[in-house]
Image 1: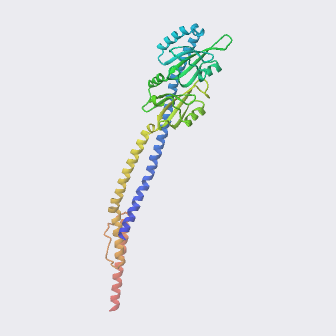
Image 2 (image 1 turned 120 degrees about the vertical axis):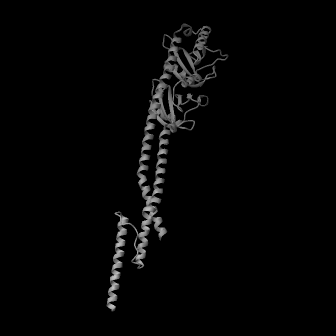
Image 3 (image 1 turned 90 degrees about the vertical axis):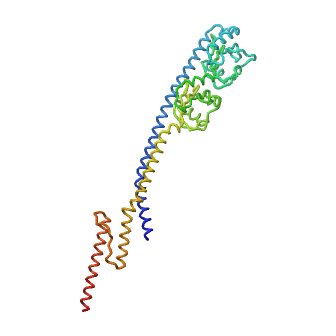
Length: 371
């Protein structure tokens, strides 16, 4: 009975401690959730700002290429198709423009008239998307990821059509941007630790991927990630698992005049674990602190409850049992303080004294009656 009483009282004291901890636990979890939301929102804004900056740099590369091709298209040696002089001109420009793999001039059937690099074969670009679009739109166009037939390098090709007086495409001036050089430009951007920068063509193929460009350039994005970018029809933010299996917050900005079908996309991603690292670390510290406080409170309830509460309750129970057995001279031995247990001890002692006095009176009356 005594052991059961001890166990029951201690369990109740521990439950009271745990109930007192619940609001603190709720507050910690709520604060952690708010901190995670704030950190995520800040990361989204940060990645979007970086994507816009990178997009601006990429626009400068595209615009610089467009202006260069426009200038080449106006040169008589290019318009007249003089292959020998044109080859020398393009080779000289290529030496000055290290970011490019080659320059070339094509006729309306896609045959090479002249090129910045020597090539023994007869490469034809009729099947290339940049050439077909230049013929169709008669405007400056941006191609897609490809391995150049002459350069054997991964490139992003640009085309500018040269029109005759009747408005028909006479020749097409082409610049092939070396993706290795484009990746070096990405390295120059200042990004936070663990950030990822990529340039994606209109088919979802990676043109630039920093870091580890040698692993990822030429690979296609996950279908769901690319679909979300296309459906956004403009810049946006998304949270997806990247090709390396890491969960990241991505911001993307389309490039080109057509937001529905842009020429390229710039993407910047930040690891979700890095974004939430501080919030998660603070949550762990707070939970650890709460756990330590809870442990100390339970220990205090266990020890203090035994000293200040359970032993006194046991004394009251034991006194009640002795009184029940008829030993009316027993007392609790507890101080009659103003507390509840002290008041209960006083009530029991007074009751015992009253019963004892009454028992003496009865005994005296019986003795008097016997005489």
